[in-house]
Image (tube, rainbow over all chains, first blue to last red; front, side):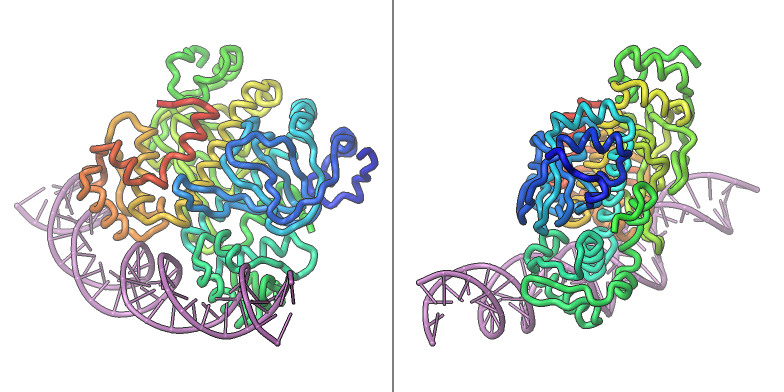
Length: 238
Length: 238
DNA sequence: GCAGCTCGGTACGGTATCAGACAAAGGGGT
DNA sequence: ACCCCTTTGTCTGATACCGTACCGAGCTGC
């Protein structure tokens, strides 16, 4: 605790805080490992901690009563959870968990809430992030409705790539199929398409981005809008 | 203006405000007609007014660069726009317009912003609404991904029915097809399915809900989650 | 080196939905 | 009454994706 230098922090929200706001929050931040599968918040339960990832990627997943599920957004060092704290909503109906292992800072929600009430800058910053997140959800919705699987896969890879350091993303097809709400074999064939165009390289349990530029062109209509919105609201994060 | 009695107001957010908050905002509220097609806010533009509908239904639509579009949510007397004011985000990338004609109150965003900063109750209430709205978007996303057209149509009709007074909803198939991001003839056949099961009655330019209970059962997995969340956050609105 | 698991590749038939086109029906204006 | 425009109904062929099943390939442990 205690000694966190803001310039050494990688989480974009923490970086963007004014110095005074940062020092106020920093004394309560605790560094934690975030292993794959770690639950940052459970559906309909009030979270004990807010998390600001430094590395790794978290998934936000909605589930229907009958157990259908779809990913509605992801975040890494660009974001935080839970949005419900910022909106004074208590809980939200989503599963939020680490999909790519990493680490980050946490603060008890009991401590974060009063800080939010006192500090307009903090509130505004996190408010803008919540907007960016909900815009991401909206464009996921659009993509689910109108884009083909391979484009949606490309979009998804790009979004992960934005939030990781190297060009390597390690995930199984099974997992990807859940994220995209499609069959597992559909992921396999969609990956083959991308691989055939030399946009990515893929092998058991992981893939490597080979040509990011071309990947963006392939995803074209599916990628970009919510990234532009994030940029407008909170600047670049990588 | 001046003389708006809170008990006579139908907009649920205005109704839920504590009396002091309501009187503070009420003196700036202006009653306006909201004809079909009226733009409550345009993409990437800062809105001049915030709207609190009393009747009618508004659509929130996301557009991709290449002009694909999909509805991500709707609201009527249960909500307001723009969410961006609440989140200190300036604008948002959506088209928001009246899809069923109605009326409501508006207030200049320049006046609403300072009220939000001063009044914690107002801020909390609208924050909770923003959460409800973004949850609605999330479940739209899920529905787009996993549910069949007729279920999505049923969901959509139910959501409209929640926000209107009678059992009658007047919209063309063309319009519906845009909302659901499907072909126009697909709407026609999906409506036939619902009509065949005697859940609705449909004729040129309008439809009538005949058996709401059965409609909910038909939509089953697609309907209910975000309504429960709204209820938890803001109570019933009809 | 073999057993046993997870993960990935592939195949087959089925179907929901699409793209596009066209015709019939309703409704309003002159 | 008529014309015209909007809205709805229907058809044909194509295709993206599904459900299911099965097998091979790659890791891990002993």
